[in-house]
Length: 423
Image 1: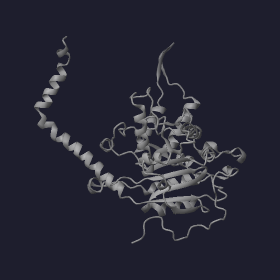
Image 2: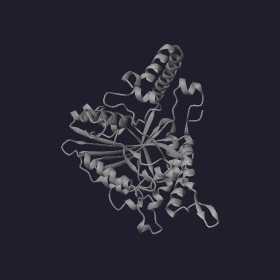
Image 3: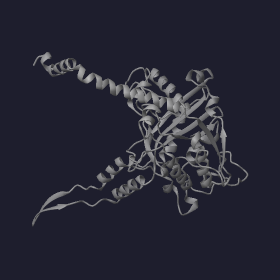
Image 4: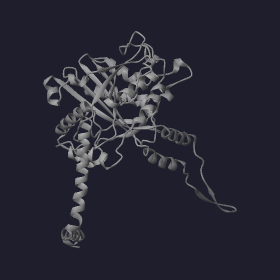
């Protein structure tokens, strides 16, 4: 077979596409135009969202377990919005609103924040007060404004940045270890899973800053469909046919205790409301003390406790974190790629950005050395989120990790509205 004969089918296909261009060109251009139009309208919708940053003032004693935060997230899931018709989808560009759960350490001084769209501020406050009556909530200015807007600005102030995003190692249906696994009937044996992170955030130099950002967006209930398929696969047992004295017989092996436990855990995981989630971790420090590898160890140590190899676990998204090496695809220009990742990471962190809804939006925001295609959003349920983010309990109070409110606060007013002002 000659060289040209080998490629003959491809050549014939190209000739047919050229000859009948009038059949495929218009539909193709329409699909591309619709995707780009939708991405543009969604960008305008996002840019017009007014935001509020709330700081949670932690009381001296928090006697409630993370189950209170579990209930908070369950109630918050009811505010989910989504486009319902052509106008909301293609004219308004409406997308489901999201929230940002944040823990910041400024040289060891730890603060808890929640960033919310203005229209949901009352829902946030009402549900937090309902579950933590002694909590104080204060609207504050955005702490990211104390830093320059760009990477170049950080460098001018002699600051260095390291950042990463965390992803799940298995499909969303498999749960991580949650606060229920850390609790015990014996109070002295109970653990608060957030304590490891706070310890790492507190024991740092005054010139270092650690930031954990958990973006959550109420998920479409259809997220469970994929999980239910996994449940069906776990339930199935391969039947084997054996030859016995009386002829052939079929046997289905019994499920092991470990397999039964996994199946039960997946089913329970799917029973609670879910949130599309992206966890972003950023470290900023003066170059005289900057240690990106230590920052990486702090977050790795904190997240390892949530993992279980037979269930689920977190890992770094190595395609987006601010490191690049010759031995990792695409193998060349690691310094340029790492710098482009820093630019993207800092921009996404400042704006609390979730990945674009569609491929067109991702490609529209592509840049040299960073195509913006590798971010991953996954679903965590309310129990998992409450494990990752909650006011530290009494179990964490033995160390002076965070500044707490000394005086007790009265509960919220009876007339506090949860949603928008009444007309």
